[in-house]
Structure formats: C-alpha cells, structure tokens
Image (tube, rainbow, N blue to C red):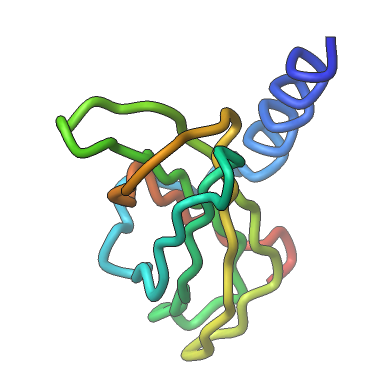
Length: 119
C-alpha cells in the first residue's frame, strides 16, 4: 500500500513538472557525485548536482536506476528539483524504491527540464 502511494505521488510530481516547454533529454545537465550501497540490505542512494544552462528558471526531474554486480537493474528512484536559477546548480538525492544487498552501480535515467511557469 505504501509503495502504491509513493508511486502515485512520484507520478503526480512528474505530471506537475511536465510543462509545455519541457523535453526529456537533458542528461548533460546532471551528474552523479556519489553512489552509496545501502548498509545491511537497505535502499541504495545516489546523489548529484543539476546545472541549469538556460536563461530561464527551470524545474527538473532526475530518474536514477541502480544495477547489481551482474548488471541487473534492481531498483530505481526519482527526485524533483524546483526553481533552479539560470546558470546555477542544485543538489539532488535519489533513494531506490527497493532494498538491495551488495555493491551497486548508479546510472542516470531520464533527466527532464521544464521552464518554470512565469520563470
């Protein structure tokens, strides 16, 4: 039940960020600075920075997939970053939705940038 609610909320955030001027391929705006496997089989975490290269205030959604040693995708997560000023950077943090044991590899999935309405 909690997972369904979380997925619903994440979907609503994605829809809220999907403005008229958004496109879905802005991986160049984001970098992963840390990829931390979970201690004791908890949820893995990826952290990074997103930089807005445009001349308008923008909102971002960052999707990260987490892979095990055998290159199997084991979980994923998303973060929403709002009000990133032109030329500025903002930190993000994505926690995987499911627990994982052992080493993990974090990979950027979709990075969506949308101009903030009125921005």
